[in-house]
Image (cartoon, rainbow, N blue to C red; front, side):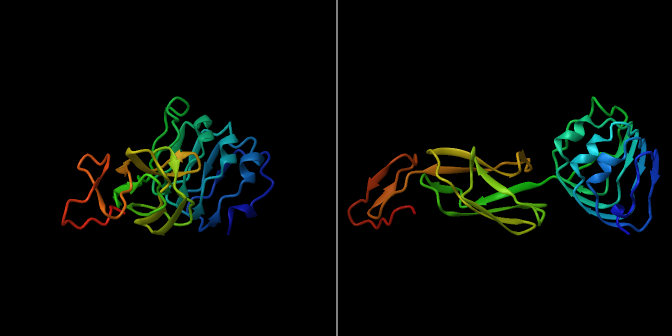
Length: 229
């Protein structure tokens, strides 16, 4: 049974549905309808999807337990204003970073999130004009989310997820030098480790890139130089 089947919550103060065999996504309306709710326990069910931002409007909530479900995604920044004395989220798949709620929920416990990490970027040498395919490898890339790869402050021309460990991005152009690579969802950076790539000039056939990666030099007599890209 989905939680959306429960209506007429205007004056409800306590709602306990732990281990009730419920599934589906969490309804937006609950955050607007549960005006007097102070105790909410939906733990140990099979809820999936994200935690609706509207739930942060339940200002009277003193206890919120959503642990042991299959909830995922980023917690909306508005949850930093939610003030439950006890807030359990463990055994879900919420993305790090979590909103800073320490000053609002001093007795919270069981707050956890999944770290997404980039372990390698290939190739790591990119022409300054960009527009080449870059393979981003890492851990815990969740399917069903629209990631955007950033090279420094510039978004990739396109970002395509292949699986939980691989994302293909078309690099944007950039200035010569080093730039960090990170994955973002909406306006939040979700990867905590950001390897770097090096933007360099593109050398034509018959030239080669010097050791400082700052200039294209003429090919030595008898040498074979096909450029660097």
